[in-house]
Amino acid sequence: MEGRSVVRTAKIMIRALLHGWREGAEAVALADDGASSARLRFDFFFSRLLKLGWKAGRDEGRRVSLNGMKILYRFNRGDLQSLREILVLQVYEAELGFVPTTVLDLGANIGLTSIWLHRRYAGGTQNAFRLVAVEAAAENAAIARANLEANGVPGEVVHAAAALSSGLAWFEARVESNLGRMLDHEAAGTIPVCMTGIRELLARFPGGMVDLVKMDIEGAEQDLLGHDTDWLDSVRALMVEWHDDRADSRPLIEKVVAAGFQHRRLNAARQENLSLFVRQ
Image (cartoon, rainbow, N blue to C red; front, side):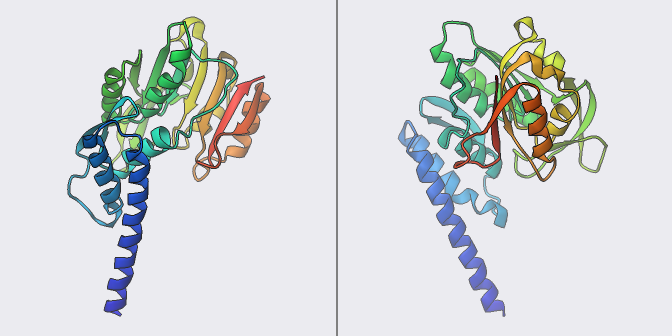
């Protein structure tokens, strides 16, 4: 029995490493230099062992140059998966029918979506581009600030949780840096975090209007989209990542459509839980 267990563990490790190798190869194809290629190859390859107890270098800071972008991340599965989804697979690629000049990034994590959206849209507009990135985890917010500065993104990072109204909540961190979530009650290991009301965030933009809202807030979309949705009158388009294990997306999609938006799934072949809403 012990021998079978060893063989099974070995097979799991081999499959994990092969998967990491393939992910690394996709990222390396976009690397700007040899050092970035080597760093990405190593990190994707060995990050697959983190779930199996690998400790060496966990959460250490990394810097790479990727497709003309200067990226700071940590050696953990959360940061690497965010890098892969946003910068390699480009899951937020979409034709909006217009060029956004104002962007509100809710659940900004380490700022990669903010950087990508700025790169995707700012070059095609003659108007000033403005971005506000909102992130509840303090360490993520600090890295997001560094990433926006390194890439010349004109915007600000707000260390807070986006909510329907301002107040206080508790942040539950996870080992995976992109899976932390907000709770409405204090629990063991949680950290108090200020909630900033969505209307207060919109007020940071000219006229209180914003062209594009990106929302990836680990189930807290229930609070923003499940009740008073009048704030959507100030929004032209939304990109939403759903978390159906925490909030049923079906009634929320209906509410956004009822607020005057057309809905379609966003790049379902790359990531199945994304939606795009554009005002009719």
